[in-house]
Image (cartoon, rainbow over all chains, first blue to last red; front, side, top):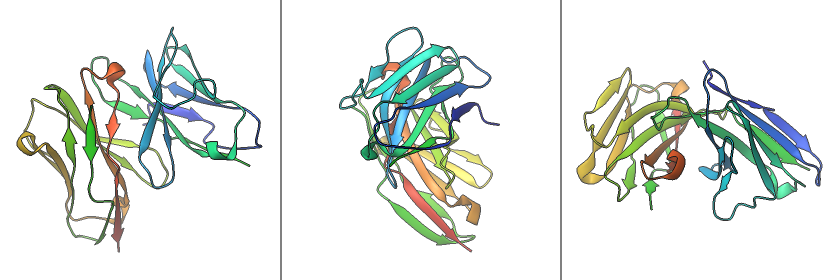
Length: 116
Length: 116
């Protein structure tokens, strides 16, 4: 069964609004989670590493003020797209390593964001 | 820096044919991990296999098999007797011990279309 969940699975919002996406590890604790963005027919692009108890680490070119990440607990990370614009429309996916000491990432089902 | 190349962007086969997906990687690290993920039309990435750099033994799991060759930096994936349900995008990925937080580097993906 699924080990990482995301909510919502789909969201449509108006330009200028903020959208929060939740990522939860279901039966394990994750001190680190990852947020990806995927455009249609393209690969996954890592946006940031979410760290429990400390600031997120953003990849080059990703605006930290635009994409706010909060790792509130050992099972929850949130990504907030602030003042969303149509170009932010994308498929957002989170992942977390389930087993301590391994590199295997388990992915959430993704959130499709459409900004009108 | 790490790099993963999947030269085939799309492969179309008829059901019951075998299909091999190529993956070539680049890294200067001696310890690393290789992965294959499947992304069906629903969007959720499904973990298929993880291989570490010290284990070159090929693996078979049902209709899936993997061929890891360090000499050519390749980690190819074969689906035997393909089925319509195998239609998906398949991603090869790499992570290294030195990559902060075990970040994954993804290839561009190969779209597999299995026709009945």
